[in-house]
Every structure is written in C-alpha cells, then in structure tokens.
Amino acid sequence: MDFAAELTAFDLPPELAQQVQKWVAQAADVARLEAELKASKLKIEALVFEIATLKRLRFGTSSETLPADMQDLFDETLAADLAACEARLEALREAQASEAEAPPAAPPKRARAGRPPLPAHLERVEHRHEPESCTCGTCGQDLVKIGEDVCEQLDIIPAKFFVHRHIRPQYACRRCETVSAAPVPAAIIDGGVAAARLLAWVTVSKFVDHLPLYRLESIAARSGVPLARSTLAEWVGRIGVALAPLCDRLIELLLEGTVLHADETPVAQLDPGRGKTKRAYLWAYRSNTLGADPPIIIFDYQPGRGGQYPQAFLKGWKGMLMVDDYAGYKALLGGDIGELACLAHARRKYFDLHQASKSPVAAEALRRIGELYALEEQARELSIEARAELRAQYARPRLEAMYLWLVQTRKTVADGAALARAIDYSLKRWPALARYASRGDWPIDNNPVENAIRPIALGKKNWMFAGSEAAGNRAAVIQSLLATARANGFEPLTWLSDTLEKLPAWPNSRIDELLPIRKQQPAQA
Image (cartoon, rainbow, N blue to C red; front, top):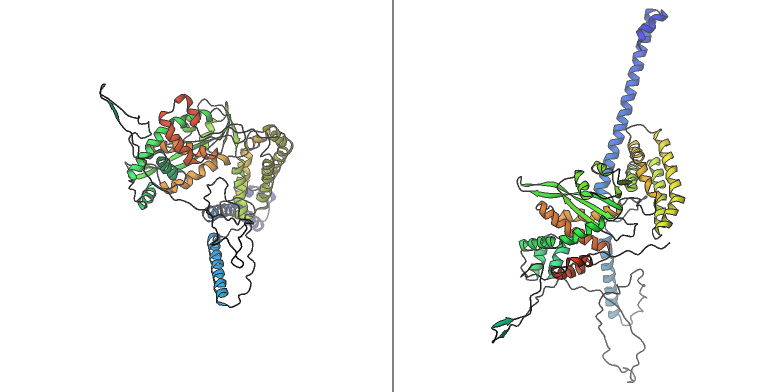
C-alpha cells in the first residue's frame, strides 16, 4: 500500500501529512522489530531445548521414566562403606565383650531382609562341620541331634586352563602290514591347539562380555598360558566362517515372518589407505515379539547407511516393517511392505521438551502416551486375539482423541518452536503410529531391536573398530547367533561350546537342530 498516495486524497496540511507519514514509518518499524523479536525468541527456545537435550544425553540418566527418580551415583561405594563399618563395629563389640569379666548380653542381630536365595541350579558342595565331641561337656551323656543350621555361601572358580591329552594307541597287523588307530574327529580348526570350549570362551568374552583380545591375552598370561593376540584373532576369524551357514539359515527363518523390526547403528572400520577409520553400519533386524515366531536377531554389516542395503536384505519380503523416520527406509515402504512407526520415538520428542522447559503440553502428551503403554502392559500375557480386542476397545479411542488434541494444539503453537516440531513429527507419521492398534500382533514401538543394538553400542567402545569389511561380516555372524541365543534363553558359552563341538561333522540337512532358537508357546487368553 502506498501511504503517500493515500494521504494526498485527504488534502491534509503539510505538517500533519508529514507527521502521519512518520507515524506510519514508526509502525512499520515496530512490526518489523516484533517479527524479529519473535524469530529471535523461537531461535533461543530452540537452542535452549537443544542444549538441554544434549546435556541430558551427555550427563543425565538414560531412563525416560517420568518423573525420573534421582539415583545416588555412589550406591556401590556407600554399600561397601556400610558393610565395612558394620564389620568393624561388630569386631569392636566382640573385643569389648572378651575383655569384660561379665560381658553383657549381645543385642539381637537384625534379620537380613530382602536377600534372595541363591539359584537352585548351582552346584552345591556340602561341608559338614561336626562338633569336637558328641558327648555333653557337663554330664558326659551322648548328645542327640535335634536339627541342623544350614547357611550357604556363593563361590566362583575363575577361568581355569587345563590340557586334554588324546592318546590313540596304534596297532599293526604283521601279516597285512597295516596300522590301525582311532580316527581323529573333525574340528573347527584341524590340528589346532584350542578345544571347542576355549574357542567358545574367547568368542563369548569378546562379543558378549566386550573384552578386547589384548585383555584375554593378559588373563591367560596370569595363568602362565601364552596366547598371542594374533592367535586369538585367527581363532575368531575361523569361528566366524564356520558359523556362517547357521546365520544364513537364521536369516531364512527371519524372513518367513510377516512383521519385522529394523534399525541401524554406526561402527568404525579401519581404512588402511588413509591410516584412519571410516564409518560403516550394522543393520539390525529382529523378529516380531508379539507373534508366535521364536526371537531371531540378525546383524547385517554394510559399508554405508544408504537405502540400498535394507532393500537388498529384504528383497522379495512382504509384511509390516517397524522402523524410525530415517529416509533410507522410505523406498521400501508401500506395495508389499507396510509401515509401522515407533511410538517411543514420538514420545522421546515430548520427553526431551518436558525435561528442558517443563512444558505442560509436553506433559499432557506424555500422559496420553503413558495410558497407551499401560494398556500394552495389561495385554503383555494375552493372546493375539485378546490383545486385538483390548486395543480396539481402549487404545483406538485414545489414539483418535490424542490426534484431535494434537491438531487443535498445533494451531496455537508458533511455527519453528520446539513444541511445534514435536507435534509435527507425530502428525506427519500419525497413520503409521496408530496402525498398531488395528491388530493384536503388531508392535507399538521399535524398542525390541533397539535393545538388541544396545550391547553392540557398549561393545564397540572396547573393540574400537573392525579391521576390514570381511572382519565386520564375520563379527556380524557371531553377534547374530549369540544375540539370538540370549533372546531365546540359551546360556551363550554352553550353546556355543556344544555347537562348535558338533558342527564340523554335522549334516547340513539337520542344521536347524543347532540353531539357538526355541519355539514360543502361544500366549494364554
């Protein structure tokens, strides 16, 4: 609008027209400054939210429980100090009692509450402690047993190295001029010095307990056993190659399912040409936790994060895929593959916002999402049909109400604000977020595969990087089998020892018998 032209129509005195033009210019400046101030406030709010989020990730608790109870960082130290003080106090009381002529009666000991019994499956080594004499020290009569006082102590035998000596006598036939002896059974490493259990111990220590090979080398050295790091690395490589057929079969069984979880995590890979490391990725896939299929976890090692890697892994697969909002999965979705979105990711946006600013809108979103998770907890042990009915009756109405509330709330929030971004994330993915409630066997979030990745994130802090892409692939094979074994309730060392013992002579037609999976029992209604 041209205010100067408009003012000429009113034929105002020059002084008044000049003053009006000045007021109009000032109003324009005020509007501009208000817009800049609003933009600055939004930017400051976004930066404060980002800083608070980064501080929580760096220094805060990893739990997203609301409200989060403060935890004492020195619980272990306090427990040790208290135990030491109690022991010293008891020793002082005993010393005072021995010095006194008539020691007072000792106060009754407080019963220890809350200590669980030791596991029943552990081996018990009994030690019977009989009194020095079975006759009464006063009258000399024989004592009569009236009961027993039994206490149990937990003990451990650390890693113990020993040697198997296999002696095969050789017999000759003088007439036929032949020699006979018991055959040498096939082994993972023919002629190798390591038995199957030692190979399993090295593997489990590295990939489950996250101990680098140099630490295993030092553990063996303390027992006077020289195990060179290069030898240990060679064993791990041989094991990865030997176990590859089992992992391939697990992948086949995984892809028979109609619901999968997928996620990825970066790992470092040595780049010899540059003398540095480069970023590679472990793509993780997990079977549905709400179906009848056994838990299967697969790690696929790839040199990048491009969408072509999950496309290649899931080529020809049909079903529902639970993923986050990463663009690499977008090309998969549609057609034969439907999308399920992770409600935990959406919740995390509101949780971070509430932690940073105590936003009442974020608190209300958390409350509504909490009601949905409470329903899932109620349905944990239900059958698929009963869970579907519960979701239809209680979850779907809450989802519809939350969607309408988000739409109305978004109209009152300025664009660019942290709350606006959190709401936009939910609204953009709402059909996929709410889709789980239409069935009883679709998951609400991607937490199962994130939990499978968590040990990898811990382990890579110790082994630092993969030496090559081939080494990464071998590690992925081992990690897939051990993660699946743990998810199915197998003790990793026991399963792997037994498998490495049997595998060299095991027929491929019976390979399923070696897999670390158990058939799940259907949930009860």
